[in-house]
Length: 97
Image (cartoon, rainbow, N blue to C red; front, side, top):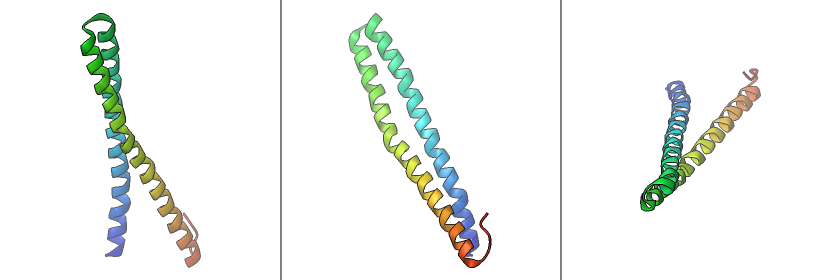
């Protein structure tokens, strides 16, 4: 049962990290599009619309920060877990992968 749980956890980790990468990518793309539209609106059309679009772009960029930190945290935890597994295998007498 422990082997099944560890395999499920090892499959869940990359999926969670990939999900966070997708979320960050979408937020940054939306932020870029809104920023481009906002700057264009600031220069060519009503300035209030440009200000609103730039503000929404800033909110999207700020919303991506915790997700980005979650990616870093997840990658670090995975690296430490894999290193710990290698050390445990080495101490048990089997060669590391």
